Length: 205
Ligand SMILES: C[S@@+](CC[C@H](N)C(=O)[O-])C[C@H]1O[C@@H](n2cnc3c(N)ncnc32)[C@H](O)[C@@H]1O
Image (cartoon, rainbow, N blue to C red):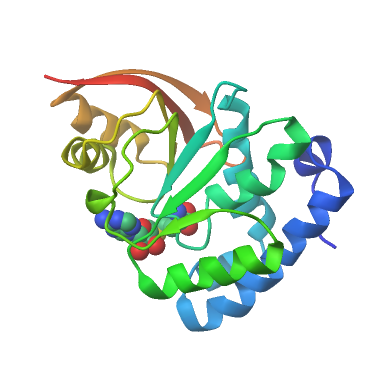
């Protein structure tokens, strides 16, 4: 079983076992579906699992429903779902993912891990439910495109959590030309060049 100091500090042994089962399942499917880059398979814990898990720092007990947009392999949503009980969080997770193959994989994964997640095989623009406490997303679209998509989808939210890589400043500058963004930016625990954005509100300029 792979162990890491950060995960060890927040999760039970039982959860860590489930996370390891998740990683094995993902790597098996990765051969067919290209869910994550092959090079990142050896660093799956820090590169993908811990990266996703850190979003739980910004969830509180008021957050009852979370939408993960463009989850792909299950990041960040499935990781958050697996760990939530260890942190006494009680949210329901929904995922919207437009690839049918990835949705089949996600459904089989949830069955295998015995977790209850609503998986919608839609383009996010066609999502029926549009009211969520939290939108969480990773490696989905640049920030400007992301905010434009949310507007087009008429999705309401209290908070957006975004994991952003080294181009975060360029993305932010571009988005701020069109949107007033009220947000906090936090250091990533997995990568010194990445940031976690907690967006509390946005308004089109
Ligand atoms: C680069 S992958 C990122 C996957 C995952 N979030 C991660 O961090 O590894 C982007 C995902 O978004 C999905 N996607 C792209 N456009 C979408 C849309 N309009 N609605 C829903 N899902 C979409 C793709 O199928 C893909 O699985």
